[in-house]
Image (cartoon, rainbow, N blue to C red; front, side, top):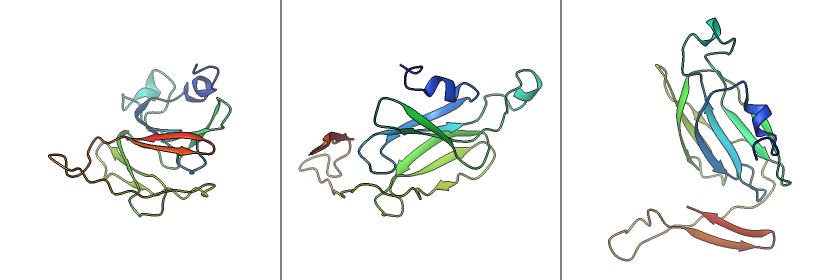
Length: 146
């Protein structure tokens, strides 16, 4: 499937960590974010690949294919955490980097759709709704969010 979706060719030159599947531009299709950085800090010496690499966003084209967008800034990225940190309705990302401060990557993509905010409250032991699955039926199809 990675060849058919165009992900294999687009990601071949990169080493990636911490994938997250989110609809980054609110158009109804899940995109893929991956944190980039080679496992070796001297990969250039034997593989010809860069050690410091960009993070990547694979934009879902809605037809089973993805277009890759390397983000600015190359580093030894590793972990990623996702959330709407500035409450503008778009998913932002915090990425860990080896020996550097973690940057907050603010999602500045144009919003093509809508978003909804929900506050989940449990009724017994799980008062924060941790682990809840939210089902949202829309005219374009069903959406599930964890």
